[in-house]
Length: 229
Image (cartoon, rainbow, N blue to C red; front, side, top):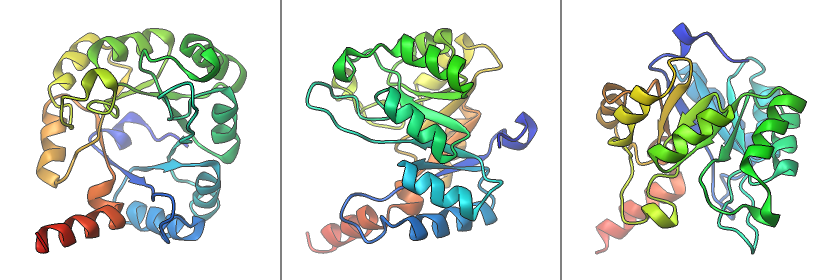
């Protein structure tokens, strides 16, 4: 269920994910962390994989879920909900909003971003969050029909690999150019409440925080590296 704009505005969305091989990557664990996040004020959660989306939907039936599925293919560097089968699986699992890579990179099997967005809107009537890396790609995704635009891939694509998230400099230009009805999300590299507030001040409607809140594997490893350096 997507809350009203008044409820969502300036709200925190928690990305509840865990890497392969981690004991945290368990549907029950993910659902518990998602519920704890929502109980403490998060307006929604961002989840990876149909299995985890389904687990949280059963545990938290009223939650706002942004869903994606990370799948890798040898013929493309696109991995966030890259194709039609992944879009269908995320939606069927119970996501309210489907997040997908909306950069200009070639997709697996030559699938077209425009075609995927059109099918998702027409056949599923699904709201879409475009994960982008640039102003150009954000505006293109909105023109194709994406309801939410996120700075998720800033610093993570071939053309932005020399930049460091969060993409705060993208936000003012995106906000000015996008229609007011398009929700602008800052995601990636938000490591403190102060950084989250800076993103809102720069024009974001919402902030997604993952590793700084739920990334136990990465956080513990970072502390241990620093202490033993």
